[in-house]
Amino acid sequence: MTTDFRTPALDALAKEIIPEEHFTFSAATARDRFFNDTRMLDVKQWVHNAFRTNPTSMIGHMIDHLALTGTEDLLDLGCGNGFILEDLRPHLADGSITGLDIAPAVLQAARQRLHGTATPCTWIEGSADDLSMLGDDTFDRVMANYMIHYVPDLDRCFTGVRRVMRPGGIFQLTTDRTDSMLEMYDAHFAALNAMGAPRDLFKASPKGRLSLTNGADLLGKHFERVHTVTWQDQLRFTSTEPFMRFYEVGHNHCCASSEEDERLTASFFAELRERVQAQVTAAIEARGYFAVTKYTGSFLCQ
Image (cartoon, rainbow, N blue to C red; front, side):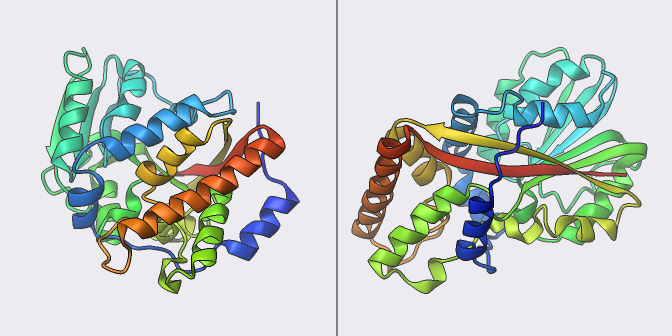
């Protein structure tokens, strides 16, 4: 079943509020701040499972398009805490998994999550733009899920993927549209406006660096065939508490608290959360739930 949550009203709102400029963060910031533990990933993963309305999960969507037979050797770039690999592993009963991540804390979590499974697993601490430790024509499948915007050198990363991927293999890169989770950004920007916040906080998701909009052109420089498959979901919250955890911990207040900034005090973020929560509460009272629409998908590259 194909689910379409897009409406003309949401498309018009996206054009009105989503800025052209997006946040950018270094790999070091991702390693040392975002993923120095698993909290951010844990909250996002819990929310996307607990509050989704699409009966097909995003992981199910990924697995469908990887076209696994069970014997493939798979490389997961930015494997995080192994949440996706845990569901994918039974589809590789006679294959192998190699997980690479720049952050030791989440890599250890992945190692523990898949410890003792029959599928052989190898774990590598490193950056996705340096695959020099891996041999040519080593993998049948390569994945990069929601992490490519942190990679310092994209051209070097994609060149490395081509080298380590066997002929006929598939590179699956999953990312968002820049207007994904539009309702959350709408509430966030409205609160910032009411507070007279610094204008440099009004930026789109860092996934704008390589989104579903611009990714095909970037990948087309390195792969002969780039096919885009899309997936939608709508998270629906009938209580403000889980949404606020998603907003504050899972997304660092839409990236506003991602890096230290002496202008942004604890009281600033307390007021920001109060204003966002008030909007979410009003939406729940009016409609019965607060919706966050997810526009995402994958590039399948060969």
